[in-house]
Amino acid sequence: MKVNGQFSVNDNVIFTGFTQIDDMHSLGSISVVGSVCASDISCSSDIRLKRDIRPLDFNWGNLSALRAVHYTWKDPERGTDLQSGLIAQEVQKLYPELVQSGADGYLSVNYIGPVPHLIEGLKDPKAENTELKEKVAKLETLLQEEIENLEAAVASIKGVAVVKR
Image (cartoon, rainbow, N blue to C red; front, side, top):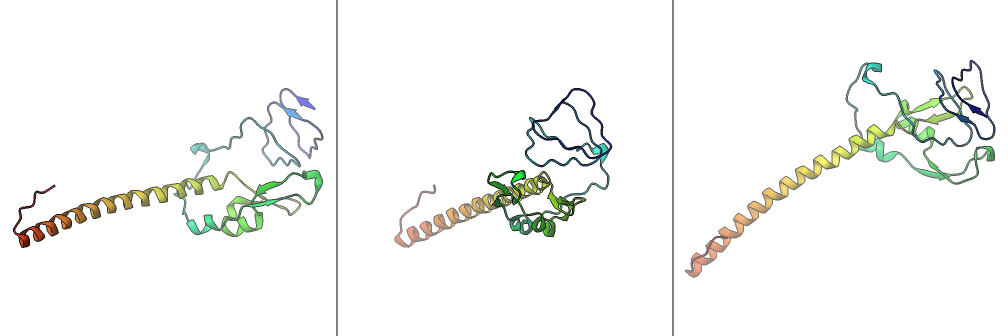
């Protein structure tokens, strides 16, 4: 099936085989059993569409508790290749906002949703790394001063002049 132009449906649609839709808009859910191949996937993110914006409460414990797994589908109609992903029930315990329940009761995971958590997670070690570099630099300076003081003390005991570095 190939659709050029507008495509609008108010009920369920089932596509089998190769389906090409050049421009599709949906105000509801679109479910696909099988693969979706796209040259670009974009999520609405315009500030004009959002309200109650606040910083993300980042938690390393939650992020590190996510368990990535390999699996194969029970139903071969979904595919038989090895898959990589998350278990929706496990994600739901940590990030309930990333899990949706379909009309059939099966759970799905918003795989784009963890990206902001990962971004915040990258900031944390970078800030810590900068802080540690500053502490190391201070300790190196203090250590160098102590070495110079010790060299001066040893030299005064021996009666020899020490040249500062």
